[in-house]
Length: 277
Image (cartoon, rainbow, N blue to C red; front, side, top):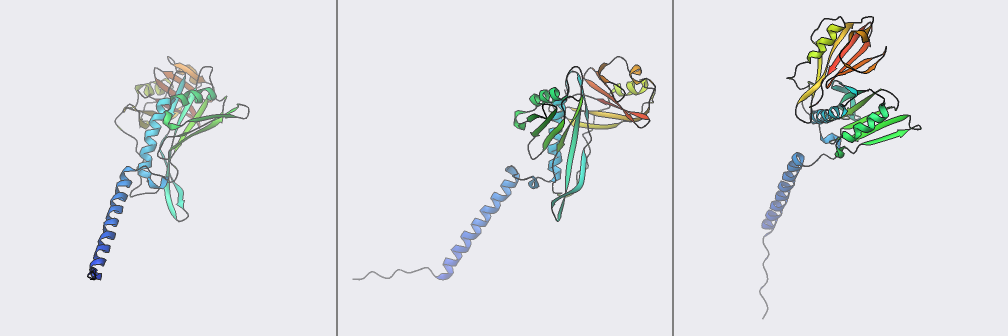
């Protein structure tokens, strides 16, 4: 006695199950893709647009600015720079952002020692690398602040001033470009008017540059430009600690504040910076 023949589902029913399985797989892949965009770390810079990159840069600048402050040295925060002259691909334009923190070294130290000391105050996650070259006469620093924000410095070890540059690299523009505005809500330090007046100038609205410190508080630098230069700059500024004073620059500290006076044409640029707290 033979077994009855097995029946196969009709072709239309098999096709329906196949279509359903493919559709379900597409839904799963789509959900995972959406989730990964919001949760997974970017693997290439192009996955974080310039808006996100500027936020990353500002955060890292606050960390560097806080680490750069210290005894016997003064700091100046640079403005946020947005450069449209970059390309992600030969046919796709992007935008790059950068910011600087300049350090003036006082006492018996120089840039080489100051850079090495600053490196110890940066987060371990930044993987800071400090190197000496040319028989120790040159010093360089590179660090990775995360999310493809780099920190770089290169200069002579014996100099009394050095600049750390933070950069995002070229990033895509998703929507409107960032405004470049700094955090607001903190006034210029009263010391700025005091120094400008001592030099024979008239206090006026300064150009301010601010950043959020790791503590959440704001700090920054404020500059009054084109102050008339007196014959004896150093003799006009009193009651402050001298960091460096010569015919090229006059750098001081008052409490935690930094005072930097630089020649600009026939006049002076006067900058007062507050520290992170």
